[in-house]
Image (cartoon, chains in turn red, yellow):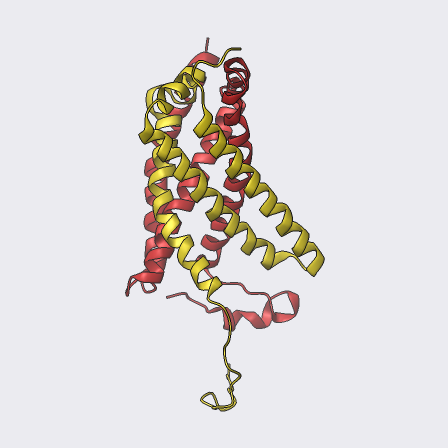
Length: 138
Length: 135
């Protein structure tokens, strides 16, 4: 399906001709790694902040206040976007692995999950930022 | 490109006596991933999007949720699955990019310590949560 294959291009690639330059599928894999690692690091912080409910209500509430800061609120949209991509692409990976036609439609499925991502993120970002923006306007 | 295989069906191939660990790890990523799609996207939807998003969250909100065994079980499953799924993903990333054996070893030790710490702390908090704790 790709116009050129990796082996055709490898002769002109950097790194002594050994650098893999796959097509769109490689970038979906790169994005899957980056979003996965970012989410894992966030999870580390998130379990620690939630553990403050065991210390005192005030300790928890004061730390959760930082999540309501406009800049952090914007990061939350980024986090939800990263997790949503990872989830949708994960489903695509499972279909490639277990569905007999998965490999054939992998490229089409990438465009479909990206479309779903946009369709979910537009209202999602609106509802996540609604209150922050209305308070900034005041 | 020509691919030359020397007698691919040769009977003198060294016997494959490896463990199936990586196979189970691969399978686990898909099974836990499927569960996490529901658990994590549900969690993000309730916490970040529904009813004013993150602005509604405080100690009282957490206490209200963890009064229900359903949400306790939800959060406990999510904690364990996400840590093992994410930890296994990071293990693969470390294996791919660490160049020295010592770097690989110590990064993985650090990873495993963080996983045990987060799973233990999270489990402890869910099981010992006290809504009447004083400030």
